[in-house]
Length: 299
Image (cartoon, rainbow, N blue to C red):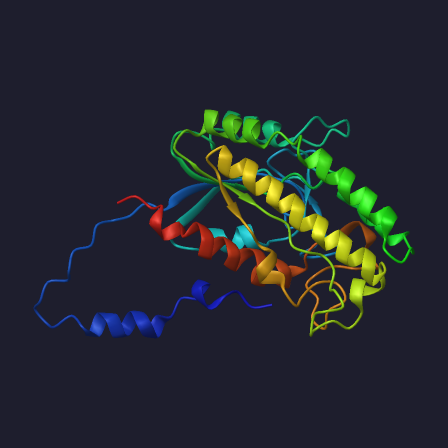
């Protein structure tokens, strides 16, 4: 996988720029700009889970096997922009907004640790996170939909509807308020989730549902993802945060498409998470185009 062209520096371009300065002339003065101080929080989709499957590692920010992350992904690419400086990455696979009994740090606990470490503070200019999928039991909904062979996927519909009920109770506003309490000047960006399954109407579809579930169930599940994103978006914007919809960037690359950007076996713990291409060609460009990090830098 190649990094996006924006990340590659060209020595030739630098030489050409230097040639424009005439002998004896003074180089133009440019005001120095400090990159935006950036902290990443969130769940598996923020931690790069699946980007180097089957590789996973303990997040050194916590040093505990309760907080795992994948390989370099969209966050690492974002950090390579000249306008961005990643000061802390606290995302953990399996993280929730609400209370957890698994020992995995919640989003609030991640923010508290980042503050304790001195990286989430008044100088922080940007915080990103994905969260909410584990709070609505994403994995259980996938299992219910995969097991549903009814013509109209009625069991899948019931599971998805229950997930949306749970989504309505996800404390997005409280989470944004908690982060802002540590980083009053930060732009807080809540990232959405991509649709997982190709549907029968897509021109790139090889198998609707990717062989994981019926075409009817796959359509219901994807619609549920859209509804979850809509709930999270409404809550995030209402709390003064920005929501970034990444689903359009994954169009044509869902499970079952001719060019899927998702893991699907044999490493089951990474299933239904993006591959390296999903992070670099899906999440990363969505972040850059929506957040516009160069506009956050300070002179």
